[in-house]
Image 1 (cartoon, rainbow, N blue to C red):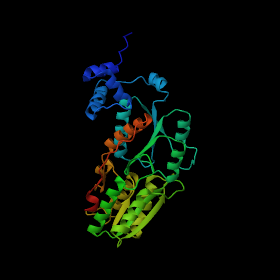
Image 2 (image 1 turned 180 degrees about the vertical axis):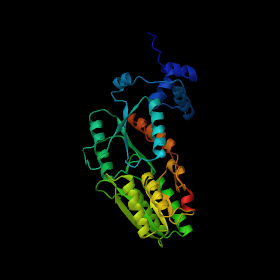
Image 3 (image 1 turned 180 degrees about the horizontal axis):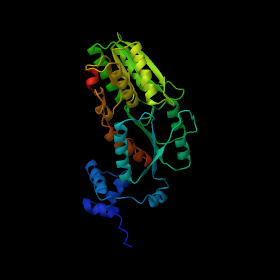
Image 4 (image 1 turned 60 degrees about the vertical axis):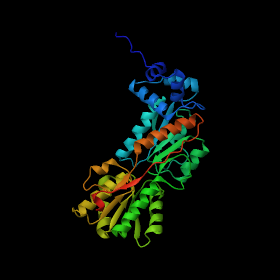
Length: 338
């Protein structure tokens, strides 16, 4: 039997970086009150990845009285390369910080009996990251009532409170409204998928408000389609019928799955360029680069947002304040609006 390979230690990382072992420990454990430059922190984390450093999570869990795992709750509309980018950023940071990921399911009709609440109460996770999750005010209130550390990552940005007076998403949506006004797309249909009993949609609220303020001449209609148990073929047929009965100047979709299906319905109605019905998807997704015509959508630094959220949840568990950071969002025009 071959001898077991020796694990890389914090001492090895310190030697490779030319730093003290204490400095490496401060970085890896996010120790409070230690002034570590951003360049040093990046050097330590990069070296840890290159040396395949794997922290002893069992020993650390006993030492810190934590599970050393972060729960990740995904939204149901994650048909998106963007989702993969956020998750990659989250995993890269948590791996280096010695945390594992626990994927959790969410039942929108569960009220207070959510799986992630049970996991936190039983000390199986230390905190939560919600990725591309349509969080309603009731859910936010539940998390705060249970005192569960959490961050939400979506096209609105990265959040940990209900205070979202101005969001990253709002910048992209207002650019979409400006494009509709400039191109004369006056008759607009907003396509939404409903899962569960709620009709809540942050994007609908932001888009309709921006239309009222910046393009009041537009005729905006919201179409809501029940999605629970409905296959893609059925939804695409419903979208096609809605487009044929009363064709708009432009269709507005609210997430990657809806955008993909709406574009299919538009092409079925008339395969042409420029399309007879223009299309804007209020989501960030690399999948739109793979469809024809390419869909006008949002462009965001998703992997960077994932790393930032993971860093903040780890900092919050150490009692450190949230670091302020500004992300940029821009409307990325494809052939669907040209």
